[in-house]
Image (cartoon, rainbow, N blue to C red; front, side):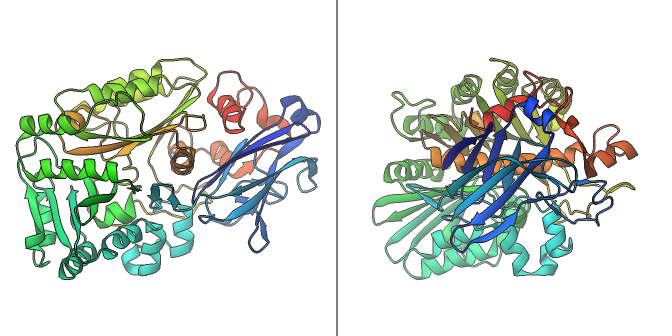
Length: 555
């Protein structure tokens, strides 16, 4: 849901997902200087019970609160946000909230309202028509986890930590399995298939008369999968995919009632402790018989366990690289394929973004997308969220590409990181993993958002890493969803939640970031209107901060 309001020169937009509300606003620079406006406070009211509070940040006016305790957050009423974007990550699905955004003028500690707008939004429900979208917390490296759980691993804390980290994702998977009844069927394909609770749920489903068949990777994940399955008692329900050309990298489960495929559970989540609770992942349920039937046909191709060449031909018979005509809201693309037309199509859509494009690239960026970030009009915002800049033998070239594109004024890149303490910090120590052996620490999602705030938003999401190998070698699946604003709003909110989270942490690692001056800047607000002066980017034409100010305020 999107709501835009304006009053006394202050323009603001609220974009509500199911667990995130994005807020953006704008106020003329001459007003900010003349009043002066020291920042913006945000008050939230939950309409169901009237609970009201001011959203909080970490920066303070040094003259008011010079040395707050580590991990302490402060009210934006007293210490307003010196930015044009914020977000509320504490909302619940299907609830109505009113946000009062206030331009605060005057002197630190004595501010008063210059202008304000009120935005009332209802967050999306978990069920959005035929779709249901879930993101785990994906932020074990966070101040909030450190505050809540004293930075102890979830194995030490217990279920409350796992519940907080899962954020409904694992619970939905278990519900997807446990609501089946006699005569139903579940057909699945998973890369890392290692969760004992899932094994037990599948065994219980089979015991009540559900047909259960799961295929799992027998390449790089073979040893860990076999070790986890040993003694699980589900040998009759599972079988390795032994002849894939690359990785059997899918993560999906098809639900059938009788002979009809009804729903599919898919996304980026491997069924491991780290996949479900550690690094960022998503799950996407589609309750559409046509889509589910395509997944069932695809599963049968995988079940035949042919080698790459015959498999790719069979896959292309049921899944085009680009729908023609593109008439359905939800299309699917499966891999392996005989060529890179699907990857070319995704890159073309990214390049043609009119206002903004957002993408997650866990393990480096294919050169097609490097060109997409470099190409097109300079007033189009382009965001990238990454686990790391590159991977394997191509790391140096990929890292150089990322470093080059992030120098462009309209491109913003964030690479996963945690806060590493130094002598000047006021942060709490953060974990970087919840298991000792962790190939991925932060970002594992695979999705692209093309003009998500436009009238025809495009969401491309699934298991594939937007790479050549994921297109021609691996078993993969992708959903392409066009024109569904509710789905786009959810994905945009989650993207910006994680992007902002890791962009800040990465910034603390940049050259000079641990100097006394730089560390003080991360603690304290400026005590006059100089926070918008030239060089800050907020009103520097063509700079990402200026483009973000305009885009996220709905202009």
